[in-house]
Length: 137
Image (tube, rainbow, N blue to C red):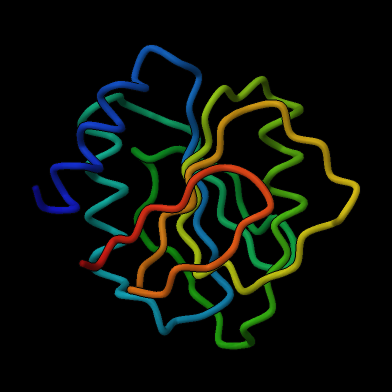
């Protein structure tokens, strides 16, 4: 099964939950068109899912319907704390996070919801919690 079908299956299984999608915008070295297609896929399964754009801080919180011109940066600095805390504060039950997981985690961060790290590479990073899923196979 291709990663696209697997991702669609994961989204479909989660569509009755309070889900959100986060995108690490700290680098423009990701497959940008693939990320845009993933955002569209999420919106087709469940309209107007919260979309969090973050690097070392929250850049924008919008929804998948309004995500038109995402600005990716080139500094490569990422921290996942603000986006993960946003999910905690907003009752998110499952967060899908597109990132290479090379950023910073605040060690004392407590998350009580599911996180799926969507990795736009073949790299298999260690994550402190949640599951990883590679967008390239």
